[in-house]
Every structure is written in structure tokens, then in C-alpha cells.
Length: 365
Figure 1 (cartoon, rainbow, N blue to C red):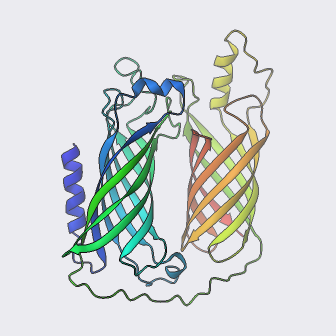
Figure 2 (cartoon, one colour):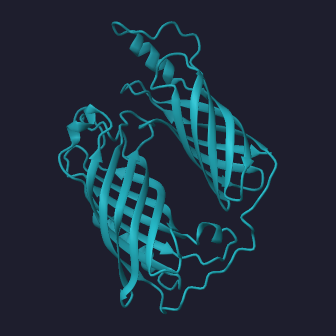
Figure 3 (tube, rainbow, N blue to C red):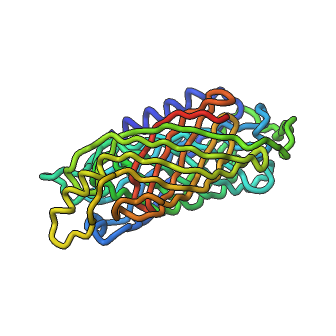
């Protein structure tokens, strides 16, 4: 399967080889699994290794927003992770990513931050009979994100260059099904890049016609989201959940906005968790009549043309009983359909423990 994935990805990349502003990369990584709790140490049998293959399309200002972010590349990447563990097995991932350049975009020596989001396939997920120690992956299909901070030099020998740096890969199913401890890898990378351009002409950057200074009145947002998840107790079953979010945002410049708002979480899986836990000796959950939670949050939105990235920190003001903790974090990817309507995918977590992945639609007025 690994060879098939790699072959398809390389074929895809070379299908774009006629694009005059693109290049491909191959990276090898070697790293460590970060342990979130004592239970995860059961599957640590070796250092994870793997490869990251990527196709990257350069942007020189064909859209107005490019200059504001120092003309980032957009691309697609494929990652192969081998945990060298009979418990965790192997993971195959595909991503969409952006490469953000530090310092002078035209410099020969470049420092780049890559951010990618996508899907991952784990070939040895949890199984109650055959693989009950794998509490990292409860399902074959998982969500995945990765970051790569690296040095790059192109065209050292003809079209071939080198790149090296650090990478972080996170894989989990966002508690769609338990168990879901997930796996986090820190690693060092080294690799080569190959320029698909037929010429080595100087970079010509097109300045934006938009000024970075930007004002806008306070906007009000309403979003409805949902999905399925399971409590942290394995076998309690998957249940649908619903989230209603209301918040105000204020643009502070063309790139950013700050947010203040509230979330209403309707999570039937909490009832399952409560009923099972309450049957245990010395349970201190108390009497509960309502299983909904209400949180207030402060957040930030980073605008990338019609896409935006939201991050927020919240606190439950309505908290029926102890489940995880009262502080939560969210990370979401939004796509604006027009000036008002948007669709989003949002991850909610409590420190390192993901609770939901939420799909939704909203309006900004």
C-alpha cells in the first residue's frame, strides 16, 4: 500500500510539471512520539520514521492578498509514518498546505513555515481482541495536521536543491470513536527539492493594490455545527451532538479580527458517560438534570482571502459535572461562500484531548 500511495503522489506531481512556478520536495524524518499520559507508553517500541512528499505552487502576487503574507506557496503533500511498533503500525496521510516565507522572499537562503491539514489512514487501529493496546487510533480514518519549520536552498546543482528542519505531525480521530489518545511526533527532517521551472529567471513580485490598513464595523456571527462522538469510555457508543455559537468580531486590520462570544453544546454522549461512571464506587459526579454545557470564549480570526483560520480559548460557565476540564480550545478552518455566509470545520479540545470535530454553516452580519 505504501508503494501505491507514493506512486500516485509522484504521478500527480509530475502531471503539473509544465507549471512554470512549481517545485517538488522529498523529506525524510526521524523523531519521537510525545506521550500525553502514562497509558500511551505501552505502544512506544521505537523511534518513528517516514517520508513527506510535496508539490508546491509558487505565488507571486496574482491575487491581492499574496503580498500581505509575503507571497506564500500553496501545495499538496503526502506523508508516510512508520512507528516501528506492532501496536501502532503505519499511517498514510494527505494534506493541503501553505508555505509561509520569513524575511526576504527573493533570498537564496529561505526560512519557511509550512502548515498542513488533511486526512490520515491508520492500518492498525484499536481492536478489542487483536489490538487492544492501541489507544492512539480508534478508527482507520483520522484527521491530521502538520507543521514544518525548515531551511531551503534551491538550484544548487541545476534544478536540485536541499531542505532541512523540524516537523510536528498530529494524528487522531477527534473522538469520533474511542479510544482517541492520538499520536504526536516531533522529528528532524532532511531532503531535496526539484524545480519544475524550465528557466531560472529572477522572481518578479506583483505588489498588492490593497493597503494593509483596513477598518470595518463590528460584525455579529451565528453558527450551527454538529457531528458524532463517543465518550472517553470505550464501548459507550457514538452519539450525534449539536453546537450553537453566537459571537461578535472586530477587524483590527486586513489580516486579523478578534472575537468574543458563547457556545451552547448539546452532547448526548455526556449522559452515557455519567450513567456508566455513576455506577462505579466512590463516584462524585453528583445529581445532574441537564447535560448541556455553555462556554464563553475569546478568539482570533486570520483571513487568507476566502479562507480563514480561527483559534479560541473558552471557559464553561455551565458545567454539569466534571468531564475533562472547564477550559477548552478550538481551532477551525472557515470558507466564506460570499460576504455573509460561511462553512467551517472546527476541532474542540481540552489541552491535548480532542473531544469533537464539528461541521457547520454560519452567517456573519
